[in-house]
Image 1 (cartoon, helix red, strand yellow):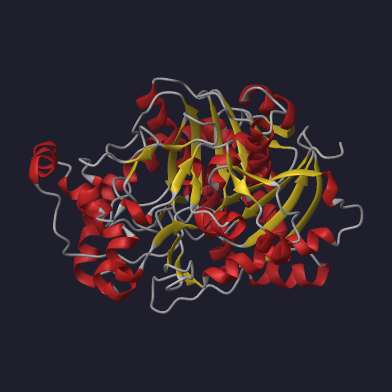
Image 2 (tube, helix red, strand yellow):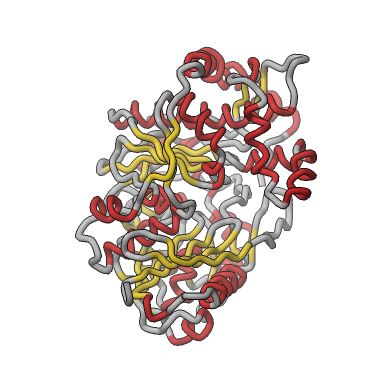
Length: 520
């Protein structure tokens, strides 16, 4: 449809994709540029020159224009979704002052002044002081202010990656409400910057002047500037429509806009998200994030290292699959389904808890991963299957906590992300949840979600329900295997759920003796 197509740009952790969708959600054209030059100046730190994010966006656009059949005149608007919690300091000329701190970064700032006054008393009375201290220690701005005060003092704008790319596109310091996922003074209930008296300004003392203007998802952020047009090839003057962070876009791109529908993201960080109209904290003081649907909330539970564990397994134990993949010209991960299927459901009693990175509550900051039940019958196949089963158990636990807090049962499951391409992983998830599991008909669910925001913003649809109905489609559904659900339910309830409580004292001892997990 001439003049009605949508250019959606998805700047993820591993790559930047530029995609053209039509108003019915069909992916017409796509290009991809990898991002693989992250820096780690010290163990646990992850940074990247912000200019690289912009350069990969420009390169992805130019690769798209070179695809046969692409017509720039068919594009009516642009929208961007990005990785979350990646933060950038700019000077008064809009130039980066230091590398971006990427969401994978694990630096912490200890010894900060605790929140005081009435808020401090309330947190002490409710037993939440430790939680608030954890949030303070995790805030990137507190680390920069403490360890690089000259950088902080020179900071004129402090932006998420989404805000930085919006600035490069429009020359305006503006960002989408749907992208605000970070340790920043944002009121997740009001979905706006926190009120002046809010405790978050004490916990994360930044000036509101250095933060961007916020715009609801599906509204216009600005127009593509002449300079951005020259660098990207995108026609100047096209509107830039606010989308949301990649996970939020993935949720609606998978078709999940009702609270009974859960979107499981089988990505670097594995998550379970449900969309709600009511503000609900599944874990106290840990807010639901903004949905890609304005005014709604995305209740999320995370397994931080999630399907990163597949890469870990490939690196540490997958030499044979890597060799075979090289011979056949395929990805090594494509061969892992055979490995899963060579081991029985339940992995002959091998049970894995995927807490490869610490958390806040469960797992707590002392947490470590655990694998129990080893015997002489176990092989690499059992280990790999136990990884996928452990991730499914963790996601089920997140689902049950969400249901308990929201009082709304989850009856439908959609999956997205790299791991969703594994039929074996989908089957295990279906068996563990005892529910049908479906995946979208296209892999690029985040990009499609951003396009849905743009389609509503451009008036192609009057509401998100009709946009999602018309632009998303199910590609494959897997039903639970009745022969497997009982063994998974027993292992989940009788083994997996008690594991953390039983092992926590040992995790505390390990942390006390070794100092690991380290504090950066």
